[in-house]
Structure formats: C-alpha cells, structure tokens
Length: 586
Image (cartoon, rainbow, N blue to C red; front, side, top):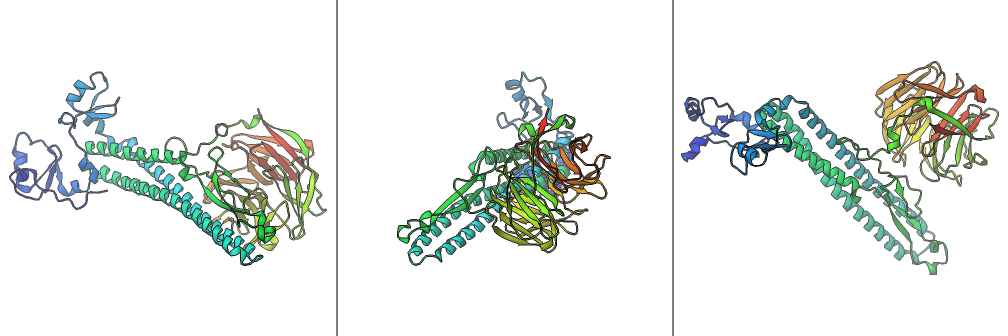
C-alpha cells in the first residue's frame, strides 16, 4: 500500500513552529526539507554529504515503510549492523550487550546493498503469489461446498415433498420439522464456511497488496528501506503460511455434505410415524481425505478434501511417501491372478473395463447400437447383464453404486445404479461423447470434435478444453491429461487447460489405445498394433513390455488400474483375452 494523503512538512521549520511543505527528503536525517532548508542542509558540514530524494518519490513508498524505526528501540541508537545468527538488525550497543559472541555480524549497509536485485526478493514475490493461489483454492473449495449444500438442500426438500404426496395432513407437521432442521444445518454450516471465506479473502487481499508494494519498494526505496520492508513482508507472509497450516489441521476446512435418510416408519402405518427422516452431516476424514458417511445418503455425489496447496516447501495436502518415489519400470512385472470370461457377441468390441470400489468389475461392450454392460464379482465371475438400451462406450464410477456411461449414438451420459440397473439420471450432450473420466467434483467427457467437456454431477457445464485428437481413450492425472492417437502412434500429455506438455513415440508403442497411470506416476498403454501392454517411466526415458503375444494377447483395447490394490485389468478388442493381474514392484 502506497502512502495515502500524507503531507510532508519541513523538519527544521517545524522546530521553529513554521509549517513549510517539504520538497526534498533527507534519507540520513529521516525528515523533510523545504527549498530554503535544502540549501542550508547542503552547506552545513554535518549534512553536506547526505542523500536527499524528491518528496514525491518518498510518498510513493508503502505506508508501513515509514513506520519502521531506523533506530534501536532499546538503546535509541541508529541500527547500523546485522546479526545473521539472530536475523536481527542491531546498534553498536546491542553488539556489546547481546551479540558479543556472534562472529558474523555485518554492516547493515553491506547486507542491504543488493537486496532489491537478490533472488530472495524475487522468491518473496513468488511465495506471496503461491500463498495467494492457495488462498484462492481454499476460497473456491469453500464456495463449491456452499453451492453443494444449497443443491443438496433443494434435492432433499424435493424428496421430502415426493414422499409427502403419498400421505396427507398427518405429514404436514413432520415436513415442517424436518425442513426446519435442514435449514438449521445449512445455516450453521453456511455460517462456518462464510467465516473461513471472509478470513481467507482478507488475508489474500492483504498479500496481494503487499505484492504490489514490493514493486514500489524495488523502484523507490533505499536499500535499507527495502531490507526492512522485506522483513516486514516476510513476517506477514509467514503469518499467512501459519494460517494455512492452521486451516489444514482445523475442522473449519473439512468438507461438509448433508444427506437424508428416510425413516422406515414412513412406509408403515401412518399412526406409527414419529419422524420424517434423518439429516446426516457428511464430513471429510482427515486420515484419508475422503468423505466419511455416518448414515446412508440419497445417492449424493462424492466429495473430497483433496485441495493441493503449494505454499511453502511442501504441499499442505501431503502426498503419501510411497507415491513420491520413482519406481524403475524395469523392475515392474505382472503376476497373473484371474481370467475374466466375457459373454461378448460376435460383433462386439470391449470398449471399457473398470474395477469398482467394492472390487466388482464392470465391462462395456460396444456393438453397433446394441451393446451391453456386464457385471462381474471381485474374482472375475460373471454375475449379470445391466440391461440398458443403447450402445455404451466408456464407464467411470461416481460413488458406491453409481456409474456414468457414455452412449455416443444417443449423445448422452447415463448415470446408472449398477446394482439395480436403474437409470438415475440422463445428461444430454450436444454431440457424441466417447471417453469418460471423473473425480470427486466433475465428470470429464471426450466429445466428438476434439473437445474435452467438464460437467458437474448434475450435468451442468463447467468448462470445455480443445484437445488435438479424438478422445475415445484418455486418462485424467493429478495435474495433466493423457490421451492417445491410434493412427499416428502418439501418446500425448497436456495440462488441465489443454496446453501441450509433451508427446511420446516408441517402436513398441504402435496403435496405442487405452492409457492409465499407477500410483507412482508410471504410464501404462495398451498397444493394439504391437499386441502388447507397455509401461513408460514418468520421465519417458524407460519403457518395458509387460504383456505380449507370448501369453496370447492380441489387439489389446482397454486397461484399468486399481491403484490402491495394484491390480491391472486387461481386455483385448474382441474380449477373448480378458484377465486380472497383480502389479509387482520389486
């Protein structure tokens, strides 16, 4: 913050009780000088060598620079030295009393001489930007939670009203009670989140202001002023870092969701009804960063606390230690576990295979407008067909029983209860959607025309990203998107905004189809033309063939990795080769 509305008066004139506006500022005397006093100042032997600057230039300095005392508060002497051991500026008396054992005391002027051009100055600016980014992420997370709670309130009220139509006046009172409780929960959680948002935004605005002030310091402050200004800014930055650390361990940033459990008595005799239902506040578990549901919810979207903050030297959301180590792909191997027998039709193509949270397996067969969805148990044994009209292509899991499936010929994404086979919702698309991925907040659809469409769980459009390839197969990583160009034999990696990060080609990787990553960031690709599954190191310097024709694999089409259990699912194009493997890291 630059100095605002400060009128500088001449110091010597003020002693004579005269008010003269300053035109110059003496850096050594720390006072303003009018035109008359400037001439006297230059002629006096004591001040002849002093440096003066234009008063307007002095006014452009941040206001906190003016409040930094250049003198020792304890000994009232000028701060001329700096002790690196204690990170403090000292006067001569301080050295004699408190720092006589410090051997590395340095003149303050020499320490501050190059501070504005030092890397520390630039790093401080970057650190502020980083913390501001973290505060923005927290603000977005809290805002998303606010919106989700509001949406959940509306959804629950809708269910309450639906139930109420099956009863009569007896339910009026109960509806009023549960609505009041729901509103109370929402209001309470809104209040908590609003408090955090307000504090986060205040700190963010303060840091943005300090960041602007750094530019003013660099342009107009003396070296010592810059040094002192940096120390002040670092103190403010450290305070914000501490606040971020506090938020990470505090309950105030845990995601909250509301679910509704219908009372069993509603379905019985009306005279026995004592409650309309039960509201459940769903909060994220700090140990695993995934929601802990204390009671059955009404098919609500998953929520998460996976906000990666980059301030400081480590992220506030820590990556498990095992995930940080790079594994040599030459030491990765596959151990055959189970064969999966898929009842695929003569014209069918196995377009997707996934493993659910409960370890059951879903297989999608695309077959010219008459495809199938198959459900298998954890051991790969066929259980049933999920009978949905249409030709499915890709599948992703949204929560315990809900899967999303693309139907390119119908321009739809269908949300299906994979246990009952019921269609929960249908999301219409403007054109064909092929590849499909999801995270705890959004569904990503690979659209016809090289477009990656991001939707929320209700089908509302979040954003669209242009990708330079058809997205029949793609994978969303932590901060990047992987996809393949089967005809050109290329593996692409782009940022979440669509910016190309790198491409990869190799003689073993011909006709690449499905792509995924393991928990160490290694990239697995199904290569149709070379009839193999390869693994590529994150730096792309090493590649290893894991499966090939020697085990009967021909035209591999789709793969899936259960990262938590290190399990790989593989199927070739016609489904005749489908198996489950354990990934072994030696």
